[in-house]
Amino acid sequence: MSIRRHTLYNILGPVAPLGVSLITVPIYLHTIGEARYGVLAIVWLFTSYFGVFDMGLARASAYHLARQHDEAPAVRSTTFWTALWLNLGFGLLGAAVVYAVAQPVFAHFFDMPEALRRNVLVSLPWIAAALPLGTLAGVLVGALSARERFGYMNLTGVLNTVLTQIAPLIVAVFISPELTWLIPAIVLARAAGLVLLFAGVWRFLPIVPSALFDRTRARALFTYGGWISISNIIVPVLATFDRMLIGALLNVQAVAYYSVPYNLVTRVSILPGALVNSLFPRFSRTESEEGRLLAERSLNLLLAVMTLVTVVGMATLPLFLSHWISPEFARHAAATGMILLAGVWINGLAYIPYGLLQGQGRPDITAKLHLVQLPFFLLMLWGGIHWLGLAGAALAWSLRGAVEALVLFYLARLPFSMRHALPATALIGLAAVVAPQGIVSAQSIIAITVIVSFTMIWALWIAPELRHFLVTAALRLRRFCLIRYRKYP
Image (tube, rainbow, N blue to C red):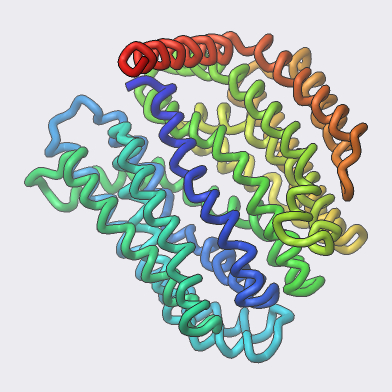
């Protein structure tokens, strides 16, 4: 299968549940209220920090299983079982730590109504149980990725994501909107997805009789995964501590005003994530120069597509939030979302050098970069929230992403063409300026149409692969229509 088809699967997998989110988020906010929604966001952000108990074994298993692509099934099975048992053990250890740490944190750190605080504390066993489910899922997804079974992997992901969104909503509407019901519903829905993932690994790895644990494989997994685990400690802080600090310095309602646009605009990262997930097994199997050439060919295509999507997002985000939620909500959240979207754009381009470095056995470079930037980001985030509120948090998050991207390009020795980057930046800025904040006028429609049209032309000009894809798709559509017409005149 081609990288193009794998990327399409990796895009459709996360995008398909987005339609469900567009429907369920307003219903959630109406049914359980902004305060409960904000608390739920904080709960899952808190548990995401303990993803460090994965110990980097999910990514390490994907890396080693990809390199064992042509080995006997028994060799791959031993690597898989070794990673799975290790991650189950670490997940259970992490669950115990979560249970011990969460009580004082939720009892004293966050500003929330006392009734909600009591509900969270009662639900702590369920919150802790989510951790081993996540560590097991990581190894299962890594194994499917290494075998390039992206179609099955994303199909099960769609089913599980839809279930985790709809099941708690049904509970909220028909039983109770209290967190003591919603949190268990989410955890049980996540557990259901593990069954389908394991069935896929059993079929496609495939799992055959083999040793269930091998010390040599365990050492190899830890050698690679140790650096990934350092990143796993820091990345959740870099990616999500903004909402934690907003909840502490401002209030839980502000978390909702920040989380909704954040969760919306970061969906754009599906595009670079899909491409790099498709490339990662190839990066892991190829020599360094061949991998770098593959990364360079992918970069212009990613820049063209990311810029076009970001321009459209900038131009429509304020109006979308106004109609999707409410004009009052958009007034609080739109500017924050636009700043975050700019950060998602530049950070999305960095997925290519990030995946290249890790795929060629250098996770130590990305881990060291995360260590260096952490204290600067925390200081910038605190100052941004203190002086500028939600917009300051978004600005700190986006600036951190931009600096990280530039450094990654340098360390991976990938060229970053300013000849392409500067026009892209200008187009995104123009889209933000002309975006209608309230009533849509004829002038704003014309301006948006011109900017989006020019961006499309520019994207096709810099990315021959995009032109080829569109021409091929048009020819196939024309052929299909002709066949249908001849069959049913």
